[in-house]
Every structure is written in C-alpha cells, then in structure tokens.
Amino acid sequence: MKPKLHALATSVVALLWACIPSTGGALAADPPAPVLTPLVADVLWAPKLAYGSDDQRHLVYELRLANPTPAAINLMKVDVIDAATQKVLLEVNPADIAKRFSIGGRRGAEAASLAVGQFGVLFVHVPLATSAKVPRAIAHRVNGLLLVQPAKEFTITVGETPVIDANPVLLGPPLIGKGYLAGDGCCDTIRHVRALLPLNGRVALAQRFAIDWEQADDQNLLVKGDRSNVRNYTIYGKDVIAVAGGTVVATRNDLPDQPPGKLPDGLRIDEADGNFVVLDIGNSAFALYAHMQKGSVKVAAGNKVKSGDLLGKVGNTGNTSAPHLHFHVMDGPSPLLSNGIPYIIRHFKMTAIDKAGTADFDNAESKGTPLSLTPFNPPLQKSNVLPMDLTVVEFSR
Image (cartoon, rainbow, N blue to C red; front, side, top):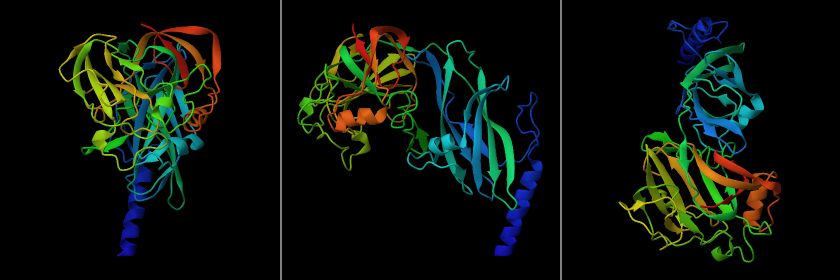
C-alpha cells in the first residue's frame, strides 16, 4: 500500500500546487473562485483596539494556521496587512515566528513549521502609533515552503478579520496607593497573553489583558526578609476595591494562602483563581479579582457595589507563587471560559518603568532583589489608558 499512498500524496500536492495563484497576495473584491490552498486559517477572536499608557494603540489577537496537505510546511514570513489598502502593518520574520507560533496553541511548543495535519496558533501583537489610521479590517499574507521534492514556495493571503474600535471599558483603579507594578501585562509577555486553554471542547483566552499587580516599597523591593512568609511582601493585605459600580456574580472565600516560592502542585482548575470576586460591570463586561486572602472577601453573589467599595484583601491563594492581585476584564462571567477584552483606567500617575524586563521582575519576586526601575521625573499623568507591562503607577481615588 505504501507506493499507492505515496502516489496519492504526490498527486494531491501536485494538484494543490497547480491551483495556488502565482500572485497570492491580493484580496479579491468579488467572491473568489474555489482554490486549493496549502494552509487554512482563522482569527480566533476579532481584535479589539487597546489604548496603552505608552501612547500607542495595540491589537492583540491569535491567528490559527492549519496544514491540510500531505507534506510538511515551513513558515517563512507573516505580514499583517490592512485588508483594504494592502499596507503592511507588521512583519513577523522567521525568528519571531519561531517564538510566537505555538503548535496546538500550547505555550512551550513553539515552532516555525507545521507537520501534516498539525495546527498552530500565532500570537500577534500589532502596535499602532496614535497618528496612524486604524484599519477597518486586517488580513495575513503568509509566505511558506511546502516540503515536497522539490520544495515549493508559496504566498497566500488568509485570516481576514474586522478590527473592533469600540468605546473601551472605562474603570477606576483596583487598588489605592503608590508603587504598584503591572506584572505580565500587555502586550508581549507570555504568561497571560498566551494563556490559551482547551476548555469544554473549545479554546478560551480570558487573560489576554490581565495584569498581576505587585507593589514595590521605597527601596524598590517587592519583598523584604523571609520570602516564605506572605506577610513580608509589600502588597500583601492591601485593600482591593471595585473598579466600577456593578453586581457581584461569583465569589470564593475559603482557600488558604499558598506558601510563596513556587506554584502549587496538583491544583484543581476550579481553585486556580483562589479566593476571588467576579463583578458584572455592565455592557457585557465582567471584572475578575483573584488570589485574595481567606476570609477577606466582603461581598457575595447578588450584592450591588459602587466604584471604590471594598471587596477584599490581597493574598496568595490559588495558582500563585507570590502575593499579588490578578485582575482582568472579560466578556462573560466565567474567569476562564470567557474572552479577555481591553479596558482603560480613568486616571493614574506613571512613576517608573522596569526597562530591565520580566527577568528583573522575576528576580525581585523570587530572590528579593530591588527592581531596576527607571523613574519618570516628574511622574506622568495618564488618563483613559491601560497601564503597560512593567510600568509602576500610583492610584488615587
């Protein structure tokens, strides 16, 4: 049977290659004729524009690519283009593909190729200058290599999707005080932005715009003294407040603090958020506060709250290795099964940024070393934007 299978594969590839348009890049105005393609693609969720504290706008989304051919494919380049003008908004080169493209959407399974029958997810971040025109729709021009004998290069345009530039969710702060560091935030970190989960027979990404809020003291320390004691972390026990008026839809309040230093083993998925509050803030937006202290949650499902009301206190419960407040906004009440959406905070001061990157943040948390902060003198007054990754902010009422 092997010769017959080989002959069948060869004939399919030959037919496939014969049908690929030689230009491959333009999006036709009229409905296209059926053409066999070496890749099938879709954008998992239409991207919603995020307004960042870096004075840029950001598109953060996921492009799924699958290989339906009987041959492997190497991905050589992906251009994100304005679907109307064909203007290139972002070039994803081979090195970036190898870092951003995850087989099966699994973090840690990054590659720049697709075997027969495989699919992968490209995690895309397109920054747009404030002065740049926002495209109404985007598409993806993929350049690849079909690994037949001889190898065949192709370029096709796939994955067209609208860009949603709606009024963003406007919030107050989740905490009050100074020295709050936006850990693992938008837009190129991997712990939240790439937390794509296979749940209930589908994929979900509720944490796309999540922030792990930690707090530095006057010496730029997240923790001082014995790192195994949750009370030695600067943020531990701080008040968590409602970012908007709304209705509490779910809470938990019975889990003990985890020992700091590592993520817990064998944690059940329903305990991942620890002690938490989900708040319905209207217009199909829900706010999640996670990892709060046992017994500190002051609200229950059905309660009405006002912006600034006390919800609980920062703890170290659930899937966490150090005390922090995990906060994100989503389009449904489930902390994991919903889709993460961008939001903006009404006003705050941006006092510093950790330009040394995530490794410096991790060391400050795990080793107790000072953060390598670059201060803003004077602090930058920010309004109606999302704090970007590793910025340090001061929140006031």
